[in-house]
Image (cartoon, rainbow, N blue to C red; front, top):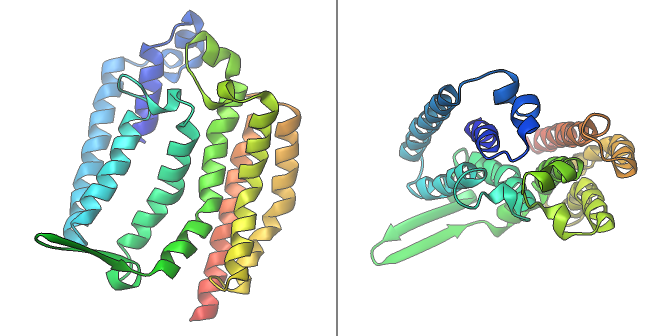
Length: 262
């Protein structure tokens, strides 16, 4: 939430096109005071810091550095001298941080260290132990959220290409041809299904995980609509619908897989 607020504040303060501040950005549209938005950001970051330190105290000290790295990406995603979302790697940072980083931390704080990842420090030695099988399984499972989250940003950048050019924002579609950008969008939309099939094929997940494929027809229709037209009002929502459909199907599939193992 803090990252979203920072994003809106930075875009408002650094807008080049005058009508963007008044008609597009939520701060100008809702007549919000920038100082109030800044106070909200500070409050959200403080709450996140307190909760994060509590989790560190309850689990392992290494969580401080892993979680802190993710928080820094969130802060500098839209702020600083060179915001990450204005670089052609914005999709990578958003997809990997939220699509893999958050699930990784969720598993990290909820399972026994020896069954996932454990880090011990006995000066001057640092030992890392755990399960490669568990880590690889998590990576394959997280291809769904990584791909769909990255695709939301990619869809947004494709729809805002002219606006971003006017506001001197450099995004991934500007470095790719239009055909390449659309090809990447399709690959990210379908890649999660391929990863789950591979996980089942290698025996990392059980067959109920394949239930995620029930979302494939809806994802295909949404993807075809966006590939035909990239418009913020008419088709951008298809990227959000794909994200919801794929991830809900994944949650149901994993719950059934877990239930079978009980």
